[in-house]
Length: 137
Image (cartoon, rainbow, N blue to C red; front, side, top):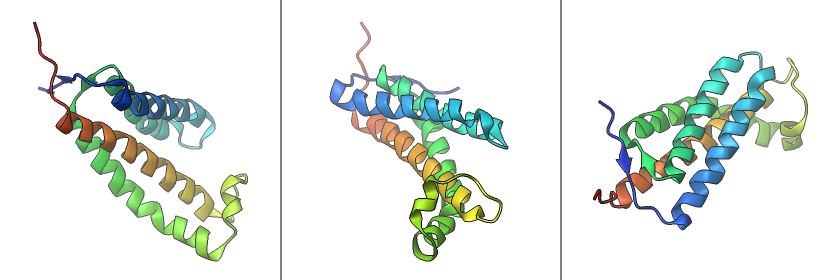
């Protein structure tokens, strides 16, 4: 059974969760034109939902931790493309269109997106361990 915690979270904690969660859900929507959209919609959608749930005070710490760590591992496999882009090519290519002769650009984008998803969910996990649970009356 998934343990969901209701937390007493101030808006100082909630606002970053809401912003990051909304950003990741928007990223999920934007993946509809990707060559493998379902994978990216699922990943960004999951992390967006984790953030928005935390914004309203609901956190499932262990599933969020597992999702965070798996996403971090996946991002780590793609980070060499970021290094290639930064040190061997023009970083402005990150903003250019996709091209089969520049796979490092797409992999760098994926690495950065996954890293953002990891950071957003890791923030939620940190909150779940730092903030006390709500008292039920």
